[in-house]
Image (tube, rainbow, N blue to C red; front, side, top):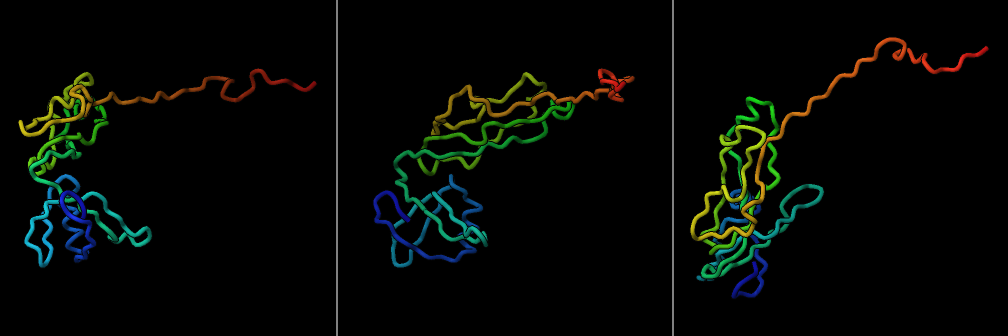
Length: 178
């Protein structure tokens, strides 16, 4: 545990409990860390998670304490909900080059996730952009409004090449003995 207004501390906790917290909170949901014998509130974010390279067991977690009265920056994931009509009806493939956006807000105002509906992706020319996200007045998005979040691309069709006549046998252009 480290961060605003405290000295760094090494803490121990039950691995299963910490694992659940990490799974549920991710890196953009504030977590209140309670330390035995202390009455202070520790609003923190998960900053780094380390796993054992062989056993894949949780080894270490960095929690960064934040001041709830000062804005911070965090990455918020973007989910695309539903099946795009251009995928269903035209056989396209949904691409999402932007998986998250960077936001600046007070720690308690950081959204968990942004969700965009795929219903509007009706053809290959329609796209979803950062400007399409539903953003509250307390959050500022750092990314450019014109940054592409998702779109549908046309299917790639392979053409089968057929070989006709003697070209298939490989006899044209060959030297003959004689």
